Amino acid sequence: MRDIGPANACLPVFKILNQRGLPVVIYAEGPAAEYLKNKTSFVTRCKITDLLDSVRPSLVVITPSTIGGAIPISLINEAKKRNLPVILFEDLWSGHSCSEWNVLPDAVCVVDSFAKKLVRESWLGYPESNIHITGGPVFDKFVNIQTGPAGYKLRKTLDLSKNWPVIFFPGEVFGMTQAVQMLVEALNGLNVPVYLILRDHLKITSPEASDEYKQIYLEYCGALKNLKAGIVINSSKLTSDEVNSGSDVVVGICSTMLVEACYMCKPVLHIWTPEIGQALFEVASNTFAEMPTTNLGAALKAESVEEIKG
Image (cartoon, rainbow, N blue to C red; front, side, top):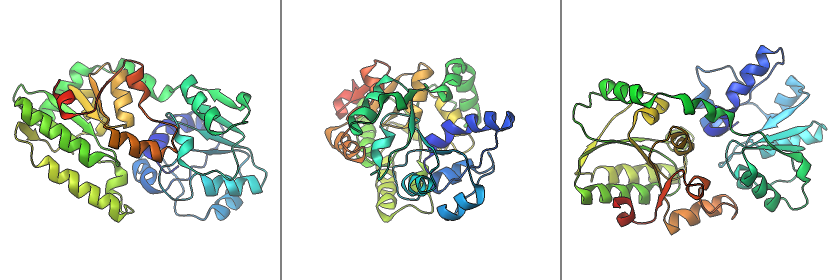
């Protein structure tokens, strides 16, 4: 695993498999390795050939990745050289389209029928019977979260004494500078004080972050300094999950945490300008042009500062 979303989704499954006497060896690199620290044991910084020769697995489960590394392409290439069965597990929609595949997995697990449709459109001729809708069990827990007590805990822990709304912006990579600038301009225009919490994506703050990512970070941090109607809050005393469950409104681009907020029935706003949409469209190899949560009516979409204010 390389990305955080798949790591978060797979971890409960791996724990269950271990409890049932089915050993699982986890390989993690990049942001996933940072995320899994203190959560479970895993192998990292290892040649894929050495890993497979040492572990000798009977099955290989791969996950999507939007940035470099050995996951998933190098891993599936080496696994298929050894005639090992390979399953691709998608935690959200269109993860498969972020990579150029030399060989396809034996099966794909997707979250819903729309995700299945995207796979079939990307991999023409791929057997429909090999695409399995397994749902998104990692999201089930959010349905039962008590957001009222979570909000009380957030305000008490972060010493938010004023009765201002708490807006949470879970960070992404592409589109961040424009989205943050738009949100800040809209909040200043409304002139209603808020507590604004932004959490950086690990891809941005990772020691392996590229110069491009570092520049994006500097740009949107600069945009945050222009907020006049409210205060930007340091939420490091809480986890991202605690902030998400305790906030009043969740605003972002396409973070998995926006989907989680939908499950908690929170007001959710996707900032999705044509420029942001095009950037993400290209990352997803032209298969994914809009967040399904907006099409399903679980979230709103804003394409301008005026629409954010509305």
